[in-house]
Amino acid sequence: MFGPLDMDIDAGGVTVIAGQAGAARTALLMALCGRMRLSSGSLTVLGYEKPSRILAVSAIACLNELDEVRPSVTVRDMVTEQLRWNSPWYKFVPRVSEDQVADMCAYTFGGVDLPPLNAFVDDLPEIQQLLLRIAVANTKRPPLLVVGRVDKIADDDERTMLLRRLVALGEHQSVITADVNDLPPDSGVHAVVNMHGLLGAGDIGVMTEGR
Image: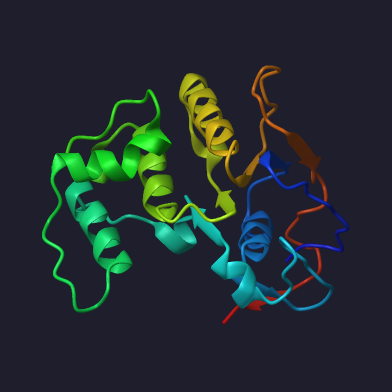
């Protein structure tokens, strides 16, 4: 679905893969965090080559193929489910409170308003939806965080706000995202990898899901 590619991404900060949206770009993002396996070639992430090892040191958010939220899900439901997923199987985890939502989300949201406890996720402003998905995916704060859908935000101010939050997260993690749009000059992004014309649907490199 993409390739051939030869690229290096530095650790730390935010790296933006600049290229058109589509299945090839999605597959590349999923490969970079161990969710998909290359059919040919090699990939090394933080010193690891096996997808299972890469998977263990990464988190991925805002790709509908992996973390799409159903319209009927509330903020409370989403955070509760993640806390239960993180807890031992034998531990009972009750439905969360506003304080528990703040505990999970405040680090990611920064100065952005936290979502109401009982609001449906689908009804939230887009910036809150995406930051909530990032916060839930990034609870363990692994060394690598991959974030898709940045260029799906229609509002320029909200898109800039999301990039600023990713830059803040990039102070303590390596963050990779993708965008087809030009970045503002003061975005704070560490690097941009130009993939325009290299991620078309006709490119080679079919991938299968990593196990």
